[in-house]
Length: 140
Image 1 (cartoon, rainbow, N blue to C red):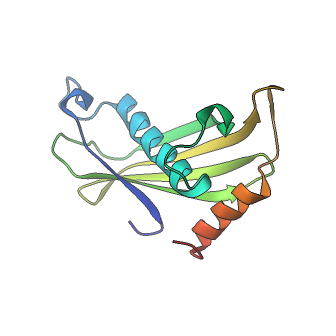
Image 2 (image 1 turned 30 degrees about the vertical axis):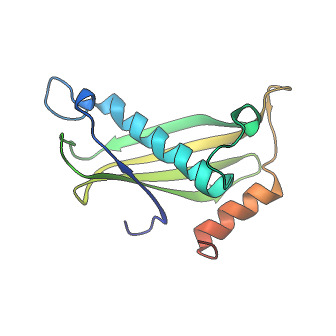
């Protein structure tokens, strides 16, 4: 998927289909969540099993532009990239394709959050460096 170094395949389940015969719009957000979590595990934390109680990354905002329906049996992929790292948050972009064709575009804001104080906090330099290195192509 051009422009996205992190791509997650999605299996369309029968339960994802609504009465209209296509993937329900709400399910697109589940696909985005799956891709977002995989990006965090692979790029940000670089471990398949981070301590979720200590992660401190929360979804603050998400939007989705639906471009085409997805049907049962199609091959679906979700591309994820960080396009901006801010002080205490970063901006994600997602692209959902079904059989290689654009199905949806999404933007999300993820905030580094400290649960003890209930406030956002600066993204640690180590996490910032991992994201920037991955997105620049200087790591695998």
